[in-house]
Image (cartoon, rainbow over all chains, first blue to last red; front, side, top):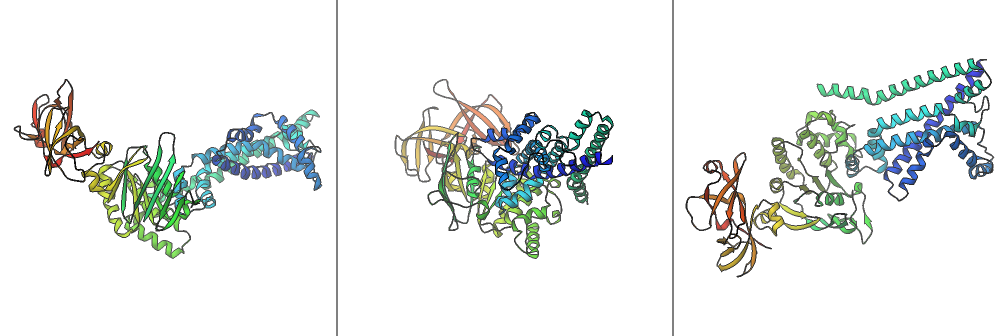
Length: 233
Length: 359
């Protein structure tokens, strides 16, 4: 009986965590690249990056299915190495990562573009490489925005349903994340199971939001308080 | 030795400058949007000229023809930004250490402590920028720029955000800084008094071009044209025709006023008879006179703007036609108290205080 709850919970946790780590880095990299890119395709690329947020998740899922499917370009390429994405666990990660990417990307880009260009230029004239500048100046200053983006991306991954269903399907113990499991529980008339799963999601959502608020606080709020105290002596 | 030759196309105007300095302090003076800051950015490598050659102590920093373009970090150029641009998440100590992290720990702390002492901010090392006054922030920005021992120091509108007292104190400190900072210094300002105080040479900018580049004394005593004269505070400018040249003096007819004045000739301009020139005089050299002697105009007091130590008076003079010509005079307090608005007075201008500009 507990298997019915633990399996979707475990799958969801693994998926959300993996997807958030992936979106975190890819979102930041894309944001940094786009905030400097000045080519003619800027608006087109920006639109493409945000597209998953605007489209119905099922449409994105269909697109992914065609891309990773047996006859799709990526599907055929991966088949060479004997890898099949469709209806496998990585498919849940890909769906969640793609669906949450726009939130991470937009938040990170906004936060980085808020950083005073003169402060970055000051680091350059002081001999910083672009790499050091990014990690020692841009990231710390953009951090509150990036942290907010991470929270949003995590929340979006946790709730991801449409694209996951299309690409990963509902294979109990393999690809059935909590949202997918809830839907199928209801379809089969297992109202109690659906309710319990929903309760679990609520708990996870709260726990992760608190955890992130705590983590963000440790890095920014407490530091501020310590600074103010030092300043008073 | 810094050599700069840079061209850059811009929507409003084109930047096109060419100058060099040798272990000295240059002030770039000009109205806002004339390309001053952009020149600094080109030298520091934060912007690229479309065309040009920039060289510092024999090192080529930029050369469009040879395809040389060093990144800012390779240039050894210190930059003090107008808004200081301190790293808000780092302490004062960490801010100053940012540019010298490749040194060993003892070397870093030795250099920073030396700088903190020179800047008179020894006790602020552990603070964060937002806990500092703007004067202290300015000092930190200066210390941070000097820490890597740059070969050239660029300052963008230094002290523009400070109040008068702090500004004057920091200006004094910057002047004493020259004694231990032996490199070239270049700063941008729109404040003539500051430019004059701190620099040895002045470059006047107008719409991306240098319209005069001279020693500071020369810029003040013989402005190259009307724009320089206006920028350097020559508020009274009249069109004139040279009537007669006799030794070091010239008689100049001012057709607009229908008056003749005697002007002492100094500087490089050798006017000839019938030449059309501009003659100018600063408000501080226009004095009250009790009786109509030579170089005296009869004017009506029109308006007063009271200053701290003197008052600016605006007089007007009835021209030949119906036109009125304004003359500005900065009078001492005692003279100013004698003036009643609407009354007529004699204004005297001494021949040696006139500036002749070929226009």
